[in-house]
Length: 327
Picture (cartoon, one colour):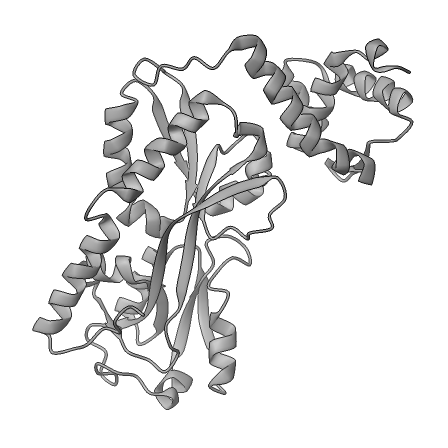
């Protein structure tokens, strides 16, 4: 079959199925029935001489041919859409809903500044914020649930664009009233205490932490695992456990939550947080404007992180403690 004989609508269907990884969700997004989606895929299989997608449980698995075709197909259709409809977008009058995925630490420390910038730049639009677990469970950035994410995204994530926003150091915390730990904690003390681990999504926590403990010869005794840094802090405040949380959270909310930072032999752990989005939204004018708002809020002088760290240093000095300086 020549390209001129190929129904362009079939390519839109395939693009949507590959993005959603589900015939049912693709049908809902395109306002079609699942049988219509299946029929379109059947016609395209014949035209391209490839199965394209195979059923797996409740979803589908793309063939190697479909995976190779996906990024080019998505980019081409988006460029065609832009050429046909133009790129006019009025941020001041838009009533669109934008969805951002960010961990609870970012929600506590950085979201207020972003919300203020969003209200100024897009006063009629709506900002929906979800956690990293929702991002992963809804198909990641390749799906249609989340428009952008602020997270520790790998550099080689397929189809994902990313730009670094800031570097977030972590600090070990204990209860402010901990009877056995002062300003510093030794390896022996670390080994004797129980730990609260944080997984903002299944399997997603501080990647370096296990290796740091292993180098110290410490086998962590994890008392419990929680999905948020705030939960870890309040548990540490009520127990003799320890936990690793972002420095910005400890500095801004530590006193209120009842925890304090301590120096430890673990060394400095820093996470590079990036603004990430998928190729499918790369050329969308509304999404570009949304990403610009996020960048602008992150680059504003005296960001939440710098303010939090400054307050944390002042608090530490008043209490006669030290916080590891940035390298």
